[in-house]
Each structure stands twice: as structure tokens, then as C-alpha cells.
Amino acid sequence: QVNLVELGGGLVQAGGSRRLSCANSGGRISFDAMGWHRQAPGKRRELVASITSGGSAVYADSVKGRFTISRDDAKNTMVLQMNSLKLEDTAVYYCYAHGTWTRSDYWGQGTQVTVSS
Image (cartoon, rainbow, N blue to C red; front, side):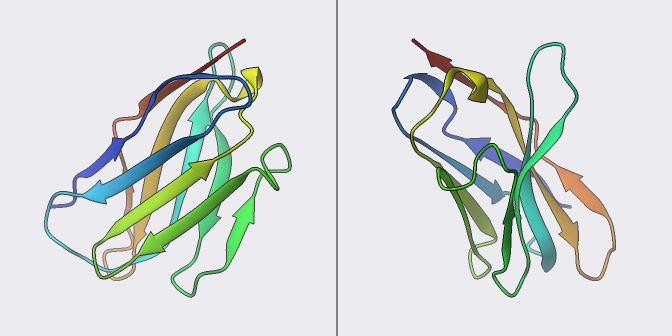
């Protein structure tokens, strides 16, 4: 059973950095696409970044040049490095993964990132 767990959320000052990690604490399976979404209060959940099993990454325009997504398939983990954080980056961040063979989408419980001025 897949159980995605996000770590690294918290309070950070504008301009600072934060590193989010996502690990599968359940049974290890193969994922193809993995990524991060976020949801700010009163807003829809939006894609932040995604990465394929081949390592190709896509970023939302709002985070390009500031965030970097990476994955370690041997460990079934994924990282989102967030730099130059802005107030508008405040949101609950969710990791997700798409099972290569199960064809199912898996989501973490979310971790809060709050950027203060």
C-alpha cells in the first residue's frame, strides 16, 4: 500500500528557502509522473512542478527559476527545493505520484508552508 508523506513545511521569511520532501512509507512501487501541487486559502489546487521517471521537469510559471524538483527512484522519494520564497507561495503543498503499473494516483496529506514578510 502506498503512503506518501510530506516533510519540511513550516514558517519561512520572504526571500528565504525551504526544502520539501515526499517519501513513500508504504510498499515500494514504481512511479512514472511525480509532482507537487499546492492550495492557498480560497484558491483552487494548482500544479507547482512535476517530474517524469526520465527526469524531465515542468514548472508553473510562478515558480520557474525559484523552485527545483528532483526524485530518487531508488528510495521512492521526491524533493522540492524552494528558493526566493514569496508571500504568494503560502499554501498547503501536496505531493502526488502516479503508479506506473497500478495506474492510480496517490496523494500525500499535505504540508503547510507559510511565508511571512
